[in-house]
View 1 (cartoon, rainbow, N blue to C red):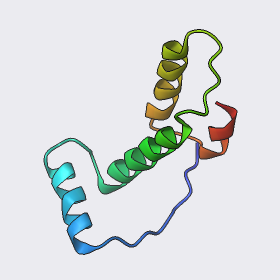
View 2 (view 1 turned 180 degrees about the vertical axis):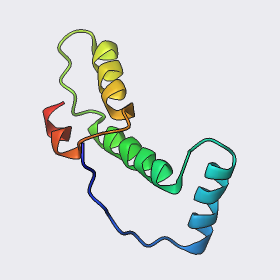
View 3 (view 1 turned 90 degrees about the vertical axis):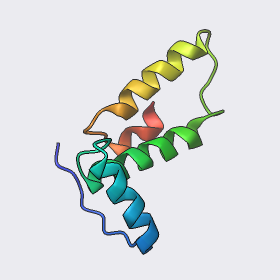
Length: 80
């Protein structure tokens, strides 16, 4: 999948925090850290919007699995 490029501006203290996460080995790069943050934000905003059709724990696990994939297509967010 081809990824789009998004230019963002962060304060120096935030950049330092991202760099520490990368240096600790938690993320491979700044981009990975920012992508993970956006995925988490997307998931957080979906909480409460998931229709409870029975096993909501299973539904959340499926959504988390989709969100955790490296190549995440944000255009499919509303189709989850």
